[in-house]
Length: 228
Image (cartoon, rainbow, N blue to C red; front, side, top):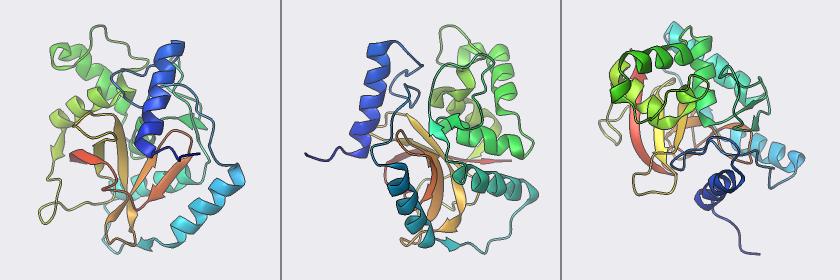
């Protein structure tokens, strides 16, 4: 059997959501249906352990905000969270469920920043700036397209490529997993360097738990933000 590429797998998840009518997969964002892991839990655990062993702890000094972010990311990568983008009334999925945006939302929450509340309030105050027809506080804060608008208005947007780009722990990165500048994924910069020498990213992809990997440039980078 021919292996399925990561970007194709993600698109199949979204297609499944559209066909089934479940979840909130809009414009290819990673908000679709529950995806069963391709590999067994033990295989995934071993692979992630081996990958993490290759990471090098960074020596950059951390602000209290960054430290809180990093501590949350470490807890999330150890939690074996299942990728599930079901619609949750109240807008907050159970602790062991979530999608890519929930990684950032939980990390910022641990650092004292209520992303759900802030995005909801900003949409109410500046609805015309957001690409949505009908606001829904149960899901709007979990969509990449809305988060980009919010971060552009409330965070510092930074360069994407070297030498100007300086990726620090807690920075937010948005990608197009299929290329062609199609926004559909978000991650948070971790506190390690990978074998490539690049900063690691903590992210949640369909079929996997939350992981910290040397994959910053695996997909097309669209946005780089730092909370001020």
